[in-house]
Length: 357
Image (cartoon, rainbow, N blue to C red; front, side, top):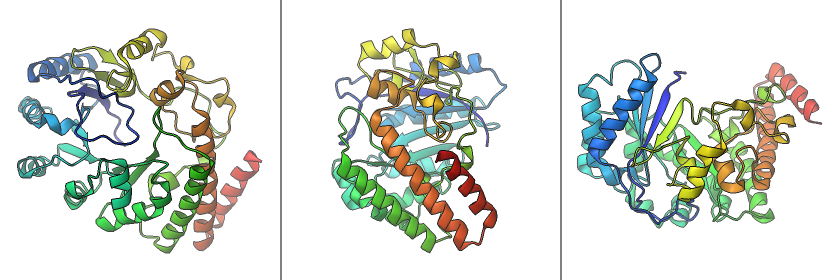
């Protein structure tokens, strides 16, 4: 896998949807100018040098609200040789604003610009989470134009009971890869019942993938169990180092989750004062660092900061949910190994289980 340095440009704080789980405050309508975007990109490309390829991400809000900026800045970069080597351009999108003009431009540039779709499953899930927007998105366009790109799916307490149906729907629509996360943040409230629904849904999806072995399992059922107990705790994300985020004024943050697009301005600014993102020991939890699942568990420092105010401390919910996910992966991967008469994998998983016990 190519390791790239990443520049996140917050080109707009505005969004046309009101997702039920969104943690981005809807109080700002700032946007970046084309001239500012070019100036910042030039500055940071010079800082990174030419030793590593770079990915520039146009972030929001909803980036396609500023399609004219994306188009002009991208073509300026390509005119200056940015598309040589392994450099990449990327933007996430909810897909609802994509029109024929945009489609034509993205198709003609699909090898040097990737558009990543966020879409939450079947019609029930999408409409529940994302402002009744199911019929506003051309799913087949995304699946056909970037077949190697994952569709990003967010699961809320209100939609978790439809998770298995949502995942199978996205596969049937043409998406080979599905990246899924549980909704988290101040506006999201999971309870025992919704976590139990999560457990049942993972079991149903295990059955689905075992019955359809040619389909690549979605991200939640692809944990690398070999990582159990192997990690020496350290910073597991490049935020603030290989990845930086720049707002419309040119102010730098470790990633978008530490920026004013996700946090109140004072808390976003405080993160730059509290943490030295080059000091990896600041990001190791005295509690989590002792867990045998530490290297397997996702460590989103920005989400930790958003939910608990401490980059090292995951929420209690995150810990409970991940243990459910770990057990589901053990069961799924054991059943898969048994179906394939894979004695070696079975033995390895049994050794992992014995470590946890």
